[in-house]
Amino acid sequence: MKQSAVAALLAAVCAFACAGCGQHRGPAPGQITLGMVTDVGGLGDRSFNDSAYRGLLRAKSELGAYIQVLQSRSAADYQPNLIALTNLHYGMVYAIGFLMGLDLDSVAKQNPAQQYAIIDAVVDDPNVVSITFREQDGSFLAGALAAMVSKTHHIAFLGGQDIPLIRKFEAGYIAGAREIDPSIRVDVKYAGSFDDVAAGQELSNLLYDGGADIIYAAAGKAGLGTADAVKSRQGCYMIGVDSDQDGLVPGKVLTSMVKKVDVAVFVVAKALRDGHPMRGHVIFGLKDGAIGLTDFRYTKAAIGPANLARLKAIETAIVDGKITPPDSREALASFKPVAL
Image 1 (tube, rainbow, N blue to C red):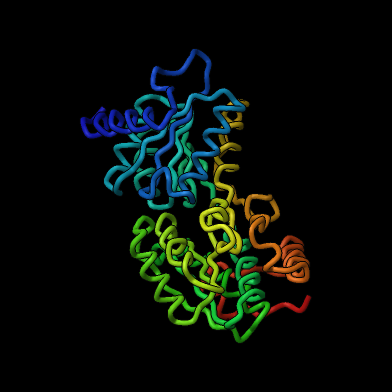
Image 2: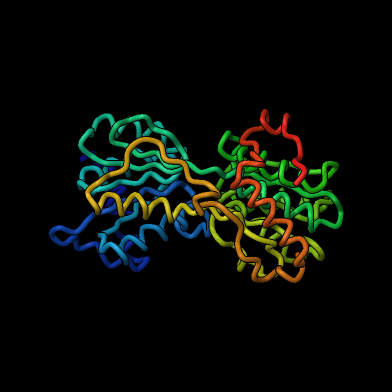
């Protein structure tokens, strides 16, 4: 094992043990083993990485899996972390995030007997299962809800990095808003990062000051800055992403667009345990129950029953194929609201 990989593994094992895993003594004979490399947001982002980790914990609880997590502090950690887990011969090694695509491709090609899974990217190697989601489905619902609730007819989108993956969230959100209000204004800004909370707060304040009363923050840990910004804003809301973030600022988070990375992680683990490791490209969406909004536990009264019923009708139309949310800016340009 390379020295850098050893150092990364030892540091991560210590950090993970301190977090309460208590499994650093090693797996028992016959126990399935699952290793995970986080994206730079890391555990505690209350979003994407935490959602993936919940899937790992579920595999530990329900499948008796031995689990280990290596946290990436920067992109330079991706390949050493992947190599470290590979050299420990985990049954499945998860790469959490599209940014690991090239590194995983390189490592997977060098280790054809090792099984890997990647979230949010497609790596075309026979020993890799690639998991992606129809984020545009849930984002469409988020946009529709924002347009129903907005008092200013002016909402906003805050992304992390301006990349095709996050543009799926952006395009779906704007299309959903236009489904309800074709003339609504939607401002768009990108933080340039998934872990810069200060930038997320600064940009969110600019968007609120500019007249938007609802911001959909698809920005990973940087989206926590939107939660900080909305706290003191009368009549304003945010929409969370990936995990259920409704409790971040109760009553100020209109809903969260939940992307159930935990479900995907668990499904991959269960297939491994059952002796049928998954292969190829698997897509999860609204129809699969892997994408959707939360239950509005703090905001149901503010939304109102009529809007909730309307939102349910839109959800049914997406599942039935009557509405096809756009997944890019190009597709958004040709989107036409559907008469339901």
